[in-house]
Length: 87
Image: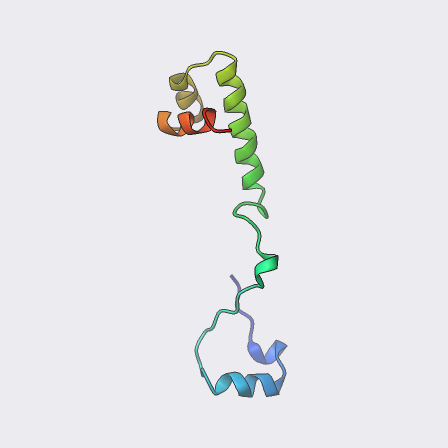
């Protein structure tokens, strides 16, 4: 998260109003709810994990054991079970 100086982007009247409540402090202004993105959507991590999980499911259906998949993907057997037995 980068910080932006309020005087550079906000009108003086708004800064004066905010100063009635807080002065010299760092405040966080959240995004509107409709502009939230799910975790990993922006960086592409979500898509990578989805692809990895699909590969794990396909290999399991192809005959690989849970133990083999855990070693191959460096995941616990419990995590592999969650992946292969999910919808």
